[in-house]
Image (cartoon, rainbow, N blue to C red; front, top):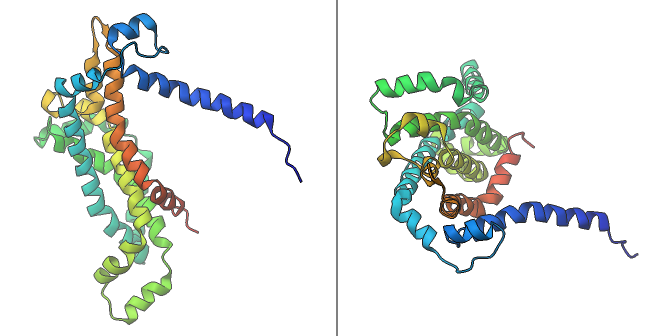
Length: 272
């Protein structure tokens, strides 16, 4: 039997492709154009002369330092999440006491508290501890707000591990620490990849905490560095968009290599 072509679906796909592809085209083409060319020819025209000067200018004007600061914050947040969340999720899954259940509910309560609601007391605490205008003062609250979601995701992944495997390890005389290292961590790679990607995205795209808890150029991150392209005389659109592309590359690379594990980990949140 021959299938009839679905013309309506084809037209819808073309419309969707235009809606998604046109902004990407404008974004990428603008990074290879000069500011004068962009102003005179408009955003849709091809570059009169292709150039990489926008990227070189961004890196030489301090955006490279902002990039390294953001990378430092991201690595710090991911490290804290990986140190805290796996043991906590393992204890929640395997423990049978009421205290563990209350701890899990307390972490879930953090999902309902937005960062905007606690930014003032957070600023007070960071200032009193001497961490204001230091990257560690951004890393700690960012990691704290990543913990509830990461705990929920990894707990769901660990609950998918068969109880028979735990019993087999116990029969062999394995301690809880050995079970955690040899059984739980290898079988939770999907969940671990998910929390790494989530924490990295939260840290890399963070704006509120760096804005409130830092002030000097030496601690500026990429989300704040984008403001430098707006002056009293206008906005350097090609320079700004090239900085946006540079800030997107690490996130795109991480997602490209971890997308399968990310999807598998998120599917395990609700159990099978």
